[in-house]
Image (cartoon, rainbow, N blue to C red):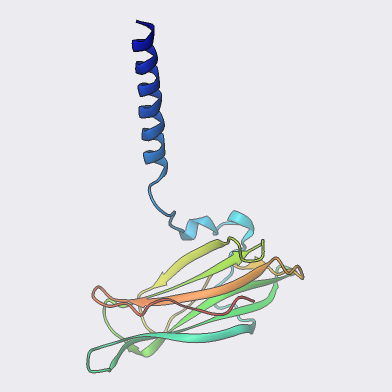
Length: 171
């Protein structure tokens, strides 16, 4: 009788542990704008019109039709500047006013690391679905510490195509 209880107890514990592992392993967590807006995680909301100085380079992402005619083009960059009396960094995405097809979506996000790029916080993605628009990510304080670094990433998608993800170097 004692061994039956023991087997039952071990079996029950294994079942509970397995269920807990399965419930906790739903895949990689997805970042959302709410993770860094409204002052969350040390970020500061800024207006989309805020401009700073460009750092870490910039780039463009586009979607091409099979005939290599651009369907949607967006540029992205990392900027720094004074926000509320603090030096901060943020991401910018600008969509083309002349080349922006229906259904296209441009997204931008900023990654921030405080441990030398071993892990990072993703702020965004923030999306726009029309041409001739400029959007920014919330800003995050810069630091002279070598452990803190930023990068800005962007992507353009349609219901059928995507541009792939492009990022600035870490800065």
